Image (cartoon, rainbow, N blue to C red; front, side):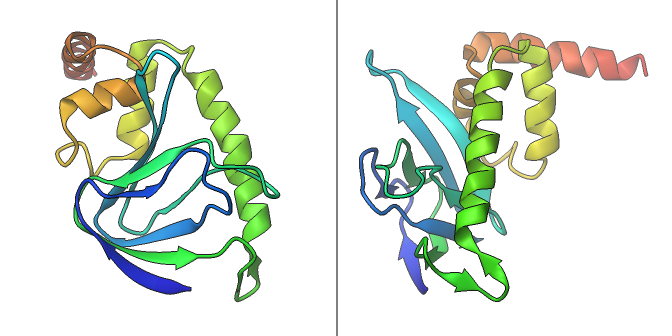
Length: 159
């Protein structure tokens, strides 16, 4: 394991990289994303301080996701075969793989449900991430995000 400093905008993993690493975010903010055949970006996940970011590539498969820094960040880089006191990384990656599949399934949920899930999962980064990236993460347009946010705010007034 080693600690590295990365600058905002720096790519730490590219799709197709072999032997991708696990990144524990000590400070800063990462995102993982894919780019489809039409060149459209799809944000998979954000990782603020205290989160782990990794691709679910398993047992030697190449990485499916890009990972970059949204802020200057300090990362603990962990090799996939590393044993962390009583924690093996491979089971963690299997869990991430299951969650990755679940997220893909969630993409078929309504925009409001996806936004509410985002607010629960990432309550402390809503102000740190551009609205356009939140919209991309949710798979909607910035205009649709604005409508959903208004709908959620109005819905919360009636509670």
